Length: 373
Image (cartoon, rainbow, N blue to C red; front, side, top):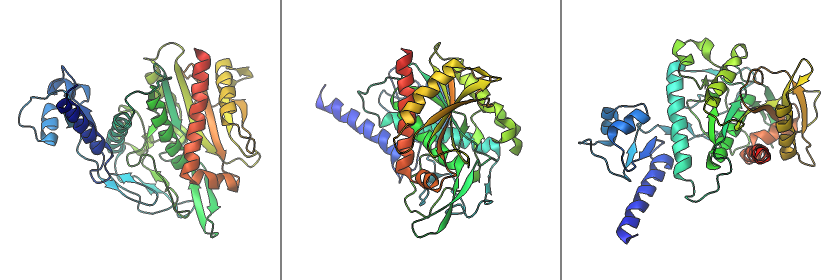
């Protein structure tokens, strides 16, 4: 390869990374033109128009060339925050003020869905743009659904905790498990898996909250990852206990294109159970005394991956809505922490611990996939 071509490829790669990841530029969904592409084919593939692509990229003609980097969406505004960053909008409060504090969405479900999808697509582009060119893909061919527990109207558990200076803070379950889900999403994509989320957020991706006093705010803006469902434009379509079956419908549509035996479902939670000991709990599907053997097998592999000597993991069978009628080859629900215990509520607040949580659950998925070969 001549030096001129090497330089062109290097510049194109740098442009792609900068457009995706630069804190000054914000975040944008980008596409690197391949041989045989046209503006029409690119617009069709990404559900946009030729005019929109030309306008965003200030193109005067319809001509494109291989290696050219095109932005497919305007840059998404990025807002720095101690418990951020955020995109489009950031919470009015810098931390969860009290147990009953909530911030209803300032947009309709339809708008929040459009923003959330664009944000997730840009995140996906960022992951793949920054991925090593030569990397192992042990999960290639697998389809995995991550189901961040609660969200929307339902915050899940909200428990009090304290900082090192004894200042009271509050931990909102759905906000923290969504962060773990996004960390898992990134790791699984890098391993070659196709990944879908059942619930998506219009204003945040991975968040690293450094100050001990900052916590994630209960925002009620999450939506189901389903364009048709959000057409109703009613607040009733947001995630809540009354529409849990929608999570399974989102997953089952994604699984229709999966190879036989290569699709998994993982629901993520952090329960608040006084009668349960510290440590993770993996739940498999058990209904009317009948155990789903594949679900139990997956749960036991996951339990081993989550186990630590000072915080042992357990497993049990239950009849849960997100595990019923699920087309996954195997489906489980993971309680990554029991935030009833003060120490565990403190742990989940720390982003290095959430990164470890994501690593361990991914390790369990990888171990089960190897077992299925």
